[in-house]
Structure formats: structure tokens, C-alpha cells
Image 1 (cartoon, rainbow, N blue to C red):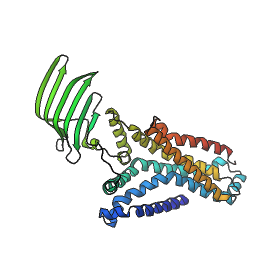
Image 2: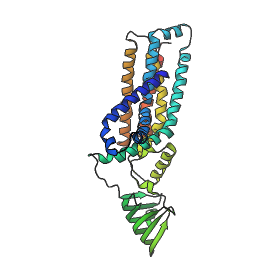
Image 3: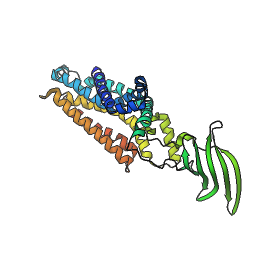
Image 4: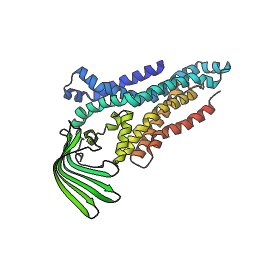
Length: 350
């Protein structure tokens, strides 16, 4: 635990120094004071960095600590005195479970809030100043409100929460039985409903059709202004219960690109589990006394950590850009390295 805390604090400090040197111009242009930059940026950046490197730092710490014991023949002495190898693994497993639990709770509730702080600062002071930022069609929407209701609007303004050229239609089977078109729509903060102006309502019942013009109409839709904000950081900012609800609503609305959200959701559970796997791999790799000592153990650990990160990135891309199921994409690194862990455990000196 001491090795882990020392290593993760050291790496975090290095990351903060490097990031500060890269974003000095953005900090100056923001006009914020030192404490405002700390509270509005680094309060989010530091937890985010820690969550990214957490499993790998656990892995390297286990290898460093155990290889030192192995180099001093302490592992040999423990096993030679009749201590079972599984008994020797117990404190490692307990420590791994404790750290995995801390990371799991952080992934569900703490890290998303930190990501919200980081993303807010980045979108306000960094992304807006980027020369690579290009325009998009984010003001036009067409989506499914529920299983039978579809709607569309154009030129949605997030500041006024209003839009023009609104339409809504309800479908039964393959036939439209209700259609509503309006010149404008705006969110009413007091009534928590959408106010529709200059609407034309059409109801269709077989060959019968009725048309009615409505000056003002208040309507409750399964939709709120927050759902119309296209935020590339949305998946990172929502705590897990909110992310679950958001995914369910997007599935009902028939939205595309849900694999990105689902991979993020499943990874919040998969990453803590990887802490346990990497802990056991670290013990089995570094418990054998070899001529190269801890240096060779650390080299093997760095290679394994790099392979883990590469596999994790590839599986994410295959899911978001391809057809790989999100659950498999989030868990495939753990599955592969669990097999490696079993193999190394069988080969470890008992």
C-alpha cells in the first residue's frame, strides 16, 4: 500500500506538471486566478488521471514490492517454512479487493463529478479557443420520444431553450394517426412543459380527418432541454444511475451511437476487476527469484501493462466503430488477462 501511494502520487504530480506546461496559455487567457484554476480545473483533472492509471500503478507496485522480497530470498524462506502459496497470496488478494472496491465506488460516483469539473473548464476555455474546432449540425434534431411518438425541430437554441419548425407525429402500426406542426416551441421553466405556438393539429382515423389550429399549447413530452444538449463529455460526467437512465431513454428514442455510452458503463465495473487480476499476475510474475532481479520484473510488468492498455483501446474502437458488443469490449481485456493469470499461477513456484 505504501509503495502504491508513493507511486501514484509521484506519477500524478508529474502529470500535473506536464499538463500545466502545455496549458499555460489557456490558463492565462481564461483570466482566472490561481485558486480558481485549482478549483475549476485541477479538482477534476487530478481524480481523472488517478482513475486512468490506478490499475497499472497497482500492478507495478505489486511487482516492485514482491520482486524486492524475492531478491532477498524472503519468498523462498516463506515457502520453505511450509507456508502454502495460496496463503501467501491472501494479503495480496485482500489488498487488491480493497483497492478494487475503492476504484469501483469512485468510478460510479466520484470520478464522473470530477470529469464534470474537468470537461466544463475544457469546453469553456480550451475547446472554444481551438483552431481545430469546426461547426456541426447540432441545432437540428429528429428523434423518437417513446415507442410510438416521433418528433423533430430545427435551429434549437440552448440558451433560450427554444426552436423553430417543430413537428410531432404518433404512429400505430405503420400508419400515422396524429400529426402536430408548429412554428415554434419553447421550454416553460415554471410549468416544466413545452409551450408550442401557432400549431396545426391533425388527427386521422381511417378515412376521417380533423384539423384544428391552436395558438398556444402546453405539452408534456418525454424530453427535457438537457436531453437536447449534444455534449461530447456527457458519458464521462454522469454518475452511474444517471448514465443508466440516460442510456434507457436513448434506447427508447432510437438514438444512434449508444455503444460509446454502453462501453463506458460496462468499463466502470470492468476496470476495478482488472485491479484484482493484475495484482495476482504481479505476484506470480515477481515471486520467482531470477538473476535479473527487480529490474527484469519491472520490465516485464511495463510490457504487460502496455499490452493491457493497447487491448483496452482496440476493443473500445472495435465496439464504437464496429459491431463488437459493448459488454464484450469492456470485459475482453479482463478475460484475456484472467487466462494469462491462471497460466502464470500454475507455473508459479509453490
